[in-house]
Amino acid sequence: MATTNERNKNRTRPTKSGGARRKRQSAQKKRLVALGMDEAAVAVLNPREVLTKLKRPAKVAKEFAETK
Image 1 (cartoon, rainbow, N blue to C red):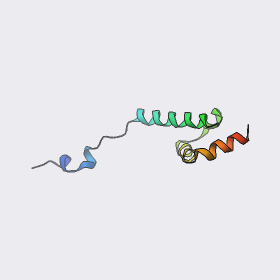
Image 2: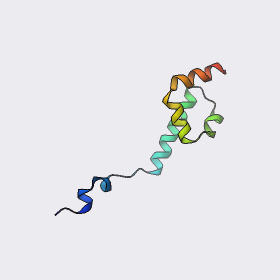
Image 3: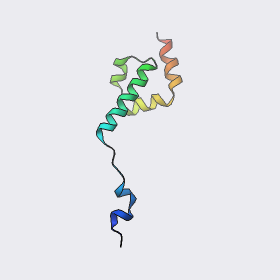
Image 4: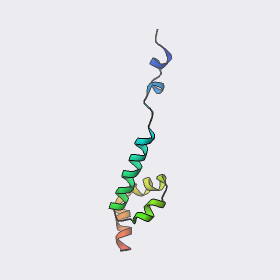
């Protein structure tokens, strides 16, 4: 017979690592800076706000192109 872990795919799934998360968040912040946001402004944002802004990159680029 199969054990519980073999039958339940949710338990055998790899977990997300903290290092990978930090790498993703760093890459996302670099993308915002590349779109024209100030580095100091990006550093203040929490991860959820960063993701929200990256959903509409054209809007972010337009918003910060006007302020320059």
